Image (cartoon, rainbow, N blue to C red; front, side, top):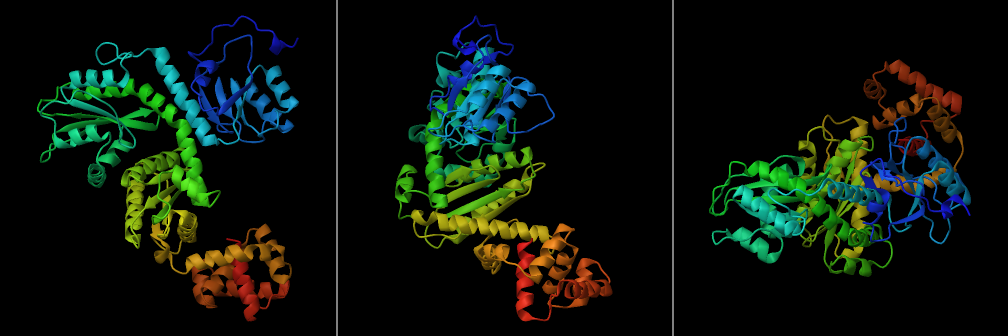
Amino acid sequence: MTRRDVPEPEREPQSGVTLREILAFDDSGTLRLLIAPTDHVVGVRGVAVGDEGQAQPLDRRIVLAVGPPASSASAAGPVREAARRGACAVVLRDTEGVPAAPEVLAAAEESGIALLARAAWADWTDTATLLRSALSYAEAGRTGETAITGDTSAGGLAALASAIAENTGGSITIEDTRFRVLAHSATRPEADGVRRSTILGGRVPEWRVAELRRSGILRALWTSRDVIHRAAEGDSPERLIIAVRSGSEVLGSIWAARDGRVLSAQAADALRRGAEVAAPHLVQHRLRESGAVRRRNHALRGLLYGRGDRRTHAWSLGLPPDAPCAVLVAERDGAAGASGDRVLDVLALQASSYHPSARVLRERDRLLVLLPVERDQDREVLRLARELDALAVSMPGSAPVRVGAGPVVPTTLRAAASCEEAALVVRVLRNRAADGGEPEPPRYAGAAEVGASLDVLRVLDAVRPVWEAGSGPVHDLVRSDLATGGELVRSLAAYFDASGDVGRAARKLVLHPNTLRYRLRRARERYGVDLDDPDTRLLITLAVRLSG
């Protein structure tokens, strides 16, 4: 029998949370355990994605290896490397119907590391969220659940809401990020109309969410880690609000309304403690929904990228297929790192609150929003783009984000066309920022605002394969010059942008005009390129634009 076949007594884990506890939360089948060490319990301290922190020890973390799948023998290398750096487990991508390579299984067994496979239908973002949320919940369970007063473990969120109400003197609602009521304290006779309609409807009314968004309360809620005070206004009583978080992720919020009583002096502290206790409950709520979320995301991707049966996708999302809609794409700077991730997370929350039927898809470096609108309501789409831009800019240390608004299309089934154009608008905005020709290049726009630049991008995309397959003097010039820094290509670009005006092009390049004339002469003499020939000039212009 092999070492795997003989169970041995388990030793206590060095960490308070075990891999077995974390996997118990995966009720959707995202992860499959291939090998686990049998001589000790696998203690887990965190999750690491890909090669992040290559020089740092992994210290009992689960590593999501985003390279070769488990069926590839080359995945043995990342498994051994993760074990060498102290990881407790490695997750590899599964290939449906293909078993893990023997070399990979052997590497895990020899290294004494747990090996798991991620289902082919899942993605790395979902997997990381699942593991981190499960870890947070398991840690909270190990720590023990101490309520504001007494023990709320038996009663869950409802008991917690009552305990917070008792300690704040207010009426409490606990809500998720889509403003659905998960629990509330007893409703007093003095309760205001908003609280009553919220509890009866199971969610905050749409008009109320819009009001909170316009007033900046939601912006503060998504970005602040402390209690927010909202003064009484009209029939609406004084309220204290706090976001419930798991690390940097916002899970929901707790609202304390005065409702005829005076909020206690310790109300803010009680809300802070309540948010800590509520976090594992909301993590569990998120985990229960994770399978449904993945199905919704699969349907939304199908609509936005034009894959599969679009009518079925619309039905899965609860959207009428004949309703007009538009798509927005918000893309962060790819080098922004964690700050860019935080900005997109907050923008996703804001976009979800904009319209009850809005559907939001969070991808690695960008956010896609499918927004149902009335026909010919392009201004509504631009309004949301402007709102997302303002929110991104207002965040401390925010990473650059550019927002493209696609056109309104007549049916949900044509959402992919709006998505494609929104992505092109983002490319135009990014190119303008890189060009440096404008002191303050726009950060958001619709198709009408970027004009002919959209058609130019489409033309360049269409001719790129023709250019890459071609040969001749212009190809020789561009390829050899780019290999040595691209000085000549940049000079030709400025010359053509200036419509052949040497003086204007030289000023843009910060060169003496004679230096630019020398470079143009070199293009003619060394490469045999005739800059006076219209066809050659067109080909060079396309080549320069394609080279970026």
